[in-house]
Image 1 (cartoon, one colour):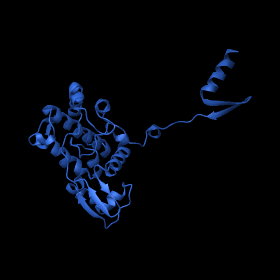
Image 2 (cartoon, one colour):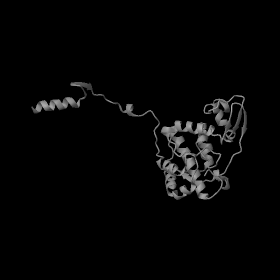
Image 3 (cartoon, rainbow, N blue to C red):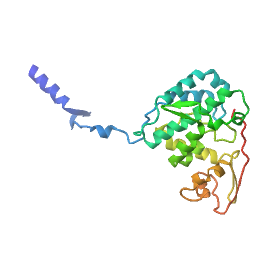
Image 4 (cartoon, rainbow, N blue to C red):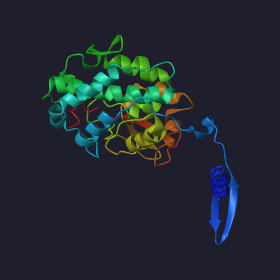
Length: 257
């Protein structure tokens, strides 16, 4: 009797079974290869959860930043920046992983810069705000100018201009979620559509455009695959004529509180 029991147990271990009514149907055991279990989606090699928590707590749905709240939680911002400093991108990181890291870094360091000088009415109240070498990440010293122009812009992804935020009213809104490699494409497209279709930033009609100065300052970045209007038409809710007249709005540097 014991030998029969062992045979039954052994038989069940080598096959999966499903019960359909009163019948037992055996299914062959499937071997899953290691590579088959790895998702094709981009993976996050760096955890931005601390930054995400701060953004959700201190940034509104509309991108208004509670700098007083950030000041109260400055130790957590410092902790996040310290984690950035000890986990700089490696050559093995994918492009999306590097983009997420540097976008979050730029935005976190901008908030840090404001807090170092708060209260102020504008980032331009700070002397040379984008060229202050205040942060050591890995073995190098960084400023905001170099992160934007020497790292992010060289990655040939114009949507960075809708993701990095210079703490001003006319900037794209600071998202209240951290950028992540696994969601970057979706986040980029949402940021582009939100900014381009925001009537406070851009006035768009078929034949007339009043655009943010971002499109003037960085025109070259938006023309890799066509004209500026071609680029805008990818995200604009209003179809724009190729012959539309273009003007650029004054930039409001007041703090994005």
